[in-house]
Image (cartoon, rainbow, N blue to C red; front, side, top):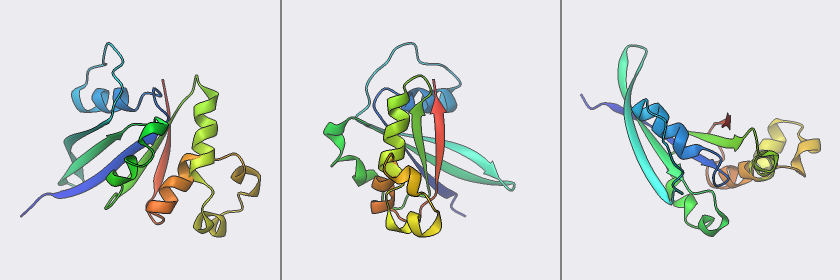
Length: 139
């Protein structure tokens, strides 16, 4: 029997700690220096309900230069981690701008106060409107 896979794509502004989060989780070691990511993949085995799953972690580049390339990692995503830095308020503003502008999300929630301030969520909703996401504060 083949092990089931869960695809998790990590998005957020550049230098908010996405790669550090994934390296720390997959190796139990904290990286000593910052290396900007273009795109990288990690995989770990996790147990869910007593069954093993492969958790595929897709690290993406947050810089605007990669806005057209980044969505290529989105198909078949099971869950997104939307990261922001707790010490960089602008990164949270970008989460809000890119995430909640979608029509589908507006229909589900009354986010009228937030909609003008959000950024990462609309990108996700545009490409994967039914895929859940978790908001993660890093650093």
